[in-house]
Amino acid sequence: MKIKALNLYIRLLFPLLFAVLPALEACAASPLPDPAKLHYPPLQFNLTAAERIVLKNGIVLYFLEDRELPLIAVNALIKTGSMYDPAGKAGVAELTAYVLRTGGTQRLASSEIDDQFDLLAASPSITAAPDSVQVDFSFLNKDVDQALDLFAQILRIPAFEEAKVNLAKGLKSEELRRLKDDPQGLAFREFNRLIYRDNPRGRFISSKSLKNIERSDLVIFHQKYFQPQNIMFAVTGDISREEAIDKLQKYFGDWPSAGKPVMPPEPPRSSPGGLFYINKDIPQSTIISGQFAPAKIDPDYHAFAVLDFIIGSGGFTSRIFSAVRSSEGLAYSAGSFYRARPDHGVFAAYAFTKTESTFQTLSLINAAINNVCDKTITAGEIQWAKNSINNGFIFSFTSPQQIAWQQMKLEYDGLPADFLSSYRDKINNVKIEDLNAIAVKYLKKNNNTLILGNTGKFGELSAGAGRPVLITPEE
Image (tube, rainbow, N blue to C red):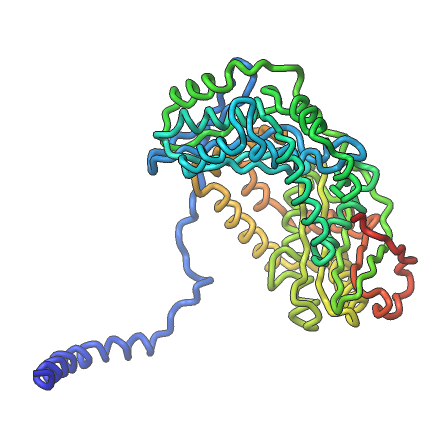
């Protein structure tokens, strides 16, 4: 039976092969068109608007309905963060955010809170950044009242149980201890400390500051910053506008406003620059070199984003990656980053290389940046950067949750209302002469260079590099 079936398959297959062969030969004779020469209508990107609503006590709500799944997402931004830490007590914001979730409330012990969240199969994530505390929380729409009740208790009436505060401090102490074994993490933290010196944004938690923090510091911090005038919500998902307002009003509407919104500390204006070493007996070096750059509100912002992409954040074909890794094979990772804040920005180049090639790698980074300053950017590079940036930008709005979040963040940062809708056009309008001008204006000005590695094996420093300063990281 098997032989008969096989013969049947062969008899059916051969006619098909003879019918398909001419078509295959025709395809081989005519090569496929070049993808770069294909023409198609331009993609249209229209940003959906979330609705902005203000509750009676001043809490701002961004709402966008989405009935695809029976889920509700609540995201929050609180105007505080690590740059608001009290002097000598760096880490208060981070611990406050952590223990808000773990430390119980004035109505429920921490174990009861945990049990209820387990029953909901949901739990809010609360994290502190330098300029905000962010909350992310999603749950089934059938659990909206129980979830928002727990959420409101955590934000409004946390207990900060002493045992949970001590546990959080112990976990953070262990994390700081392990940072010594993370050369790259340590180097980037110390680079931030250098560039933000004498500014609250340069405060980073240490073992010393951790010992200064008591439970009362978390209570005071919460009372000062966790107030309606400092809070914004984005609510998306399977809930109507009316129900979203009703539920937030129910659980947060009677929270009294206690004053004016928090004003952030003054941004850094300049940095003295310099060359700094951190000695660590390891076979590789971490190099970070950078300076202040345009803020998001600066007219140079969009052009600098394109410039950074060409210099190093664009991946394999960017200038630094090509010079350091592709051409010389001196690093397994090299590039640049541009962190643009509403009121200032930071640009830096980096590379991770073996100790013996430390100065050669730094020289290649500097040469790549200097070469950009010499007006060598090509039309092909700028078009590649624009296309890549704009294509990536669209993926910031793939869900209603992202859309509402981005628009809430826009207001939180105090940026113009058309910042998002005009972003792609402003990127497209960047010209080569704009890049040439801002490269000279910003790059290599009061540059801070930090190298972490075995300083005894770096070799001879090139002339004119400046005298290095050996620094010891705070533990």
